[in-house]
Length: 414
Image (cartoon, rainbow, N blue to C red; front, side):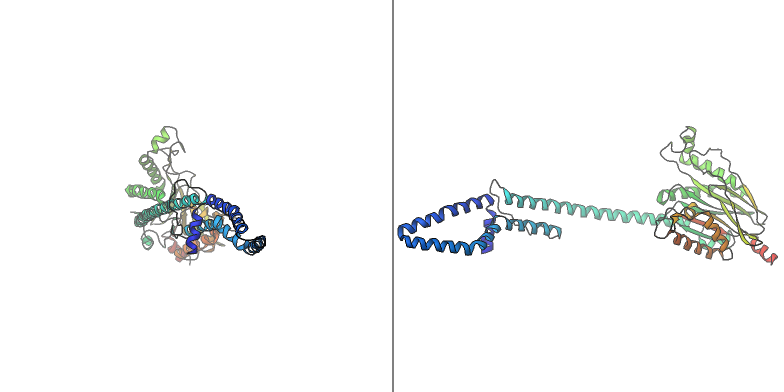
């Protein structure tokens, strides 16, 4: 009953409450005094005034609190509880709106405005929740598609367990930064030997993966048996095909060059040809080098064939670009390694520096006696230790293999 009365007083508004209190405070005491003067003597009036003063002193604090609650505090508490209810997700049930009575002001209008603001926020929250559900479904579909694309990219490459069919003791460390990546490797057997290479396409993730699939298709389309011993010619033909497919032959002819067009896609590649009969390896590099671990007098040592600082298929690369070839005698070679820059350029360590060639060469020398699969596992541990808590910068691909004559040579020397 008291709460209902307090709610009704609060719904009157501050203006009506103040006017009512002023009227009661001004007229009621005067009216009571006049009644006493007419019905009682002066002594009774004095006694009444004393009792009024005593009652005023005794009731001053509770009356003030009641007035404060009626004038402002009750409405402020209702507004605060309403805001807390919205914050805690309880909806609009904590706000009781008085019926509309024409012109409204002060707390009545404030409560009504807060109510409709809360209704708008809840409606927006429901819309956002629906949009988030749609986004989650779209993200799930996209991730399913990317994972399926990753499975396709895996199938395009020679699996780890089949590397031995192409190169003795072969092992590959292939770790895309995302589900799919712009790094890949390619092996192709010819009548007299085998091509083995790694390549790093523009970008990473889905765009890079598309370029790897295009590159694999073009490499498989080459008549490799006619290109035996000529990895430079393989790169030259891949360059012409890739530029024509991507429409970057026209970009080069028009003088746009690097950055002139909206896209400038291509790849870097290191490619070897190893003869089955031994003798000399032939290597051609377009931005990716070859690390050869040799058996020296004082232990293992590394020789690097750096190749050329150019790419394949980019707009600035001429259509008739020739790729130089280097030869390396296979006698005394323990293992051969091709790596994309995702390994060497990874920043980490206390000084936040790239892993770098020197550290990679030191690793190859220190682990030359281990089987190549174990080497690759240790190399990944080195990479992760160097990276620490830092972010992966790029895809990582390292292909290691031994020439067919290395085992025979080692037995003969023993």
